[in-house]
Figure 1 (cartoon, rainbow over the protein chains, first blue to last red):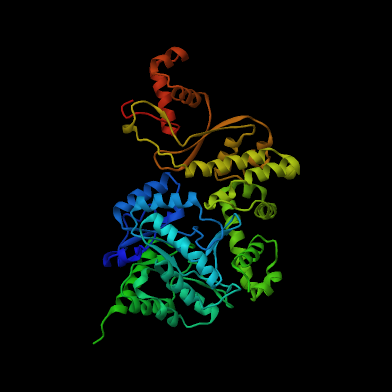
Figure 2 (spheres, helix red, strand yellow):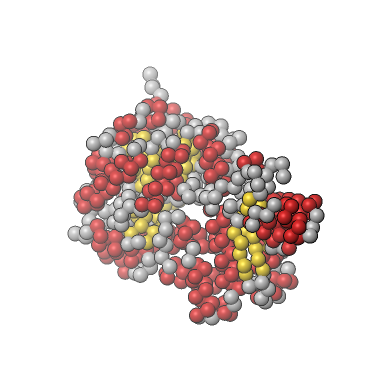
Amino acid sequence: MTNYFHTIDKKIRNMGFGIGLRRSHFNEIFDNHDGIDVLEITSENFMKLGGKERDVLVKAKEHFPLVAHGVSMSIGGLDPLNKEYLEELMKLVEFIKTPYFSDHLSYSSAFGVEYHDLIPLPFSKEAIDHVVPRIKQVQDMAGIPFLIENPSYYVEMPGAEMKEIEFFIEIAEKADCGILLDVNNVFVNAMNHGYDPKIYIDAIPSERVLQYHIAGHFDEGEFIIDTHGAEIIDEVFKLYEYAIKHTGPVTTIIERDFEIPPLDVLIAENKQVRAAGTRALEVKV
Amino acid sequence: MSSLEETMRMMHSLLRGEKTAKEMTEFFGTNEKRLAIYQRFVRNHVVKTLGKNYIMFRRLVKKELWGILSDQYFRDYPATGWRLNSCTKLFVDFIAKKVREEKALGGEEFYIELAQFEWEEVIVYCSENVIPKSQEIANPVLNPTLSVMNFEYPIGTFTMHWRGGKRKEEPWITSKVYLQKQPQMVFLLRHPQNQKVNFHVANDRLLFAFKVVHDEIDIENAVSLSGQNEETIRMILNEAHQAGIIILPENF
């Protein structure tokens, strides 16, 4: 068995703090990036595209370390993994020299139809047996570590045989892949499904966490929605600090996909994330 | 216990709108509101992308009709490609069917051509073709992102007026002159300078430059074939170069 996630050295595990590369910042990011150590590429936004996207990607890889994060692999889907998608993804992975690539532990297509959204899997043994070989397949194809991200979910699918955290860990361990821990998703799921987010974090095998996501969400009252469209709230910062204490320093990316603010706002928020990460590791005497 | 496939089939029915959230509450053991989140997200991805890719069409047909059309499109044309833009590709076919078979939109073929134009703009924007730089070529070449479109209606003129900023006051738009047939050729391309999608309504000079480069006619032959002098031909080619239709070598 190839232990891809073990091939990551400490420098890669902690590339610092960064944001996602978004079109609205294309013209500014290369001149205004105070405190941004790393950029995350949403894979699909740069796959099979020429023009501005391609030009920016070429420039971005000269200026920043880049990591690839996808949303359309449908790793949990029943349809065979999309060959064309994977080929294009591998081209991108190779082109930007990302040290690892990631996607969500969910599915985004079924029965030949694309949903363009992340649909949760049932926390069942059948789902584990289905997903594990698919993760191994993509990891072997790329030859670099694949990370699964804990997705947000609003409905627990019927057929659950275990808790969400048990499901997540069993898959990561059986597939021997890395983890992209989305702290906001932990918070959102904990609130929506009534569990203690710290217990979830405590159970995470810290050595497998190769990247963090941190983001804002929207409170609808009855439940909260993982929108990536608002600023990070204090409780999520605190949970992030708690998580960093558990895992040690790990590359952290702010996810902002909607209501994207001016770059300066994200730069300031990135500094807050850095401060929280640094605070978490301070030794109190 | 539900199998993985059964759960996914039930979710599929919900997401495709074949079943309402209310009908699914028992199977999923949760309330309608939580299930509706997924229905809303999946539908919105398609509808919002449709509205972005067919922005002139959307605004032209107005909110109410657009709502009906986008709902029907979502229902009848499930997304099949991983690229978000690709889920809107068949909107042109959908509109053609509505106009020709159901005589929707007054049965006006203009709307089909408008949708074709807007979809082609997406194709050109996304084109993986790399536009060569002047210093990389020895002879004039066509812009590899160029798409030449022939319309029965004045799509280029419509777009110029529409995007000109005063469409609500522009008589050409308000009196619907665009619905009168007026064949028009349009060059659609990504401009080498800024990678933005541009279009030009074909005129004699642009067509001449296009033909010279497309048919690889050298200046000497272009002079003898056209009866124009060399200076004029170079000027015409330069205009097409500035427009982004052709790329001229550095020291042309």
